[in-house]
Image 1 (cartoon, rainbow, N blue to C red):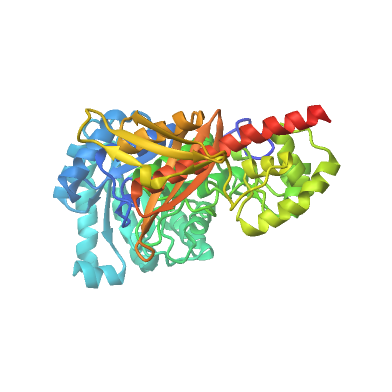
Image 2: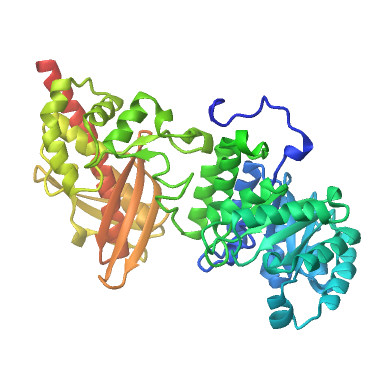
Amino acid sequence: MTREQTDISDVGVKPDDHVKIFDTTLRDGEQAPGFSMATDAKLIVARALEALNVDIIEAGFAAASPGDAAAISAVASEIKGPTICSLSRLNDKDIEASARALEPARRKRIHTFIGTSPTHRDAKLKMTKDEIIERIGRLVAFAVPLCDEVEFSPEDAIRTERDYLIEAVNVAIEAGATTINIPDTVGYTTPEEITDLFRFLKENAKNAEKVTFSTHCHDDLGMAVANSLAAVRGGARQIECAINGIGERAGNCSLEEAVMALATRRDFFDVSTQIETQNIYPASLALSRVTHNPIPRNKAIVGKNAFAHESGIHQHGVLADKRTYEIMDAEAVGMPANSIVLGKHSGKHAVRARAEALGFKISPQKVEDIFPAFKKLADTTREVTDAQLVRLISGNSIVDGRIGPWRMRRTDLHIDMEEHTKPIARVTLEHDDGESRTVTEEGGGPIDAAFAAVCAITDVSGVIKTLDLHHDAEEGVVHCDAVVTVEGRDYFGKGKEVDLADAAVAAFVAAINQAAAMRMGAAEYSDEAAAS
């Protein structure tokens, strides 16, 4: 991060300036359909959260299942920095289950809750107001000696009558709760409303100065981050959030968005977190990989487009001074440096800048010469790759949109795991010069072996970085997106085949082809320049 944009290390921080980050990726986040995590996956995410330096990790709901309790214990045993928390319904069995699961933790928090809104009282709990108040006082007090901290949440607080909400909060504080969380359980509130509610609670709750008020907002109306930040303006000093904003229904407040809003607009919020922001993107990527849910391109802070520019006007501005269109540095969140994406909206400034970044000494006249061909190509593809640009500069034609000299003979792809002790793959590729080569390689798995065979054939050493496969039931084909690293540079390839292995290898070949084209085109351009 740059000091001008987000570095606040030189600013004196008063205790009330610190906003705790309570991460619930492993609890509320994984409850979302498609995001369930086994213990080993939870540990990967927990390590990323520890590297982020979050204050609290809500590791699960111990009473939900033996597996969840075991995962909490595993996280509590390994993670030493953040406080480890378990969710509990407001009953003695849940609270005891949480206490048992948290035993290995260096610092333990039990987070207990009960519904307080009319809807929850009447439809779900079938309890009176007095019965709920009695249970809050008795069971919060029961939890206090079993852990270091007790957090209490009046579920659906936003739709709870204010006089009754204050009564519930007062009883919880008196019973020993150290954090009072105010959940917007159904994502119903607005920024103005929640700011006013937190000011009301801070002013009217007894011994309010002894507890931390927390906000937990859902994104049903798309306002979870805005509402969480508004709660901070009202006095909240803990934000409950999740990596990539995952969670029930439309999700939770997004950790990365809330943290970077507070950091980038410190001048407005006048508070800070202790998050190591350069570890935000690695954490987002880790969650994406273990849950097999890709990060949306347009996701704020961590999406592929967050620091990318295609518009010619934007590219010109960013090339002159990136502050024209960027309010924070990509490096501040651990992402690669800001990206100029070449497409149909790009201008000559961007083409020349990208060529120079690739190592070409290109004249203004050369840019003029290749620009019509660049625009024609850009009209037929979403993005002009580095390899395509190199081929334009070097004068090589681009045939059928394929970049690079190799094509896969998919009928010759053969994977055999029965006659060998290790998985093997036999791959045949054909070169533009008519040569056909077949190589057999071993690997850690059959597809890994196929990748090794491709590298041996092409003499390009590539390492798979990401591989995303999905089946299209309507087309009856498998789509594959691959990112392959070659000599420190990433290349993107796509494949579409009936067979999963064929699709993976096709995408890998497409990426390797780009690296081969880069190498070949750069060499030819150098020869051309030397001859001239």
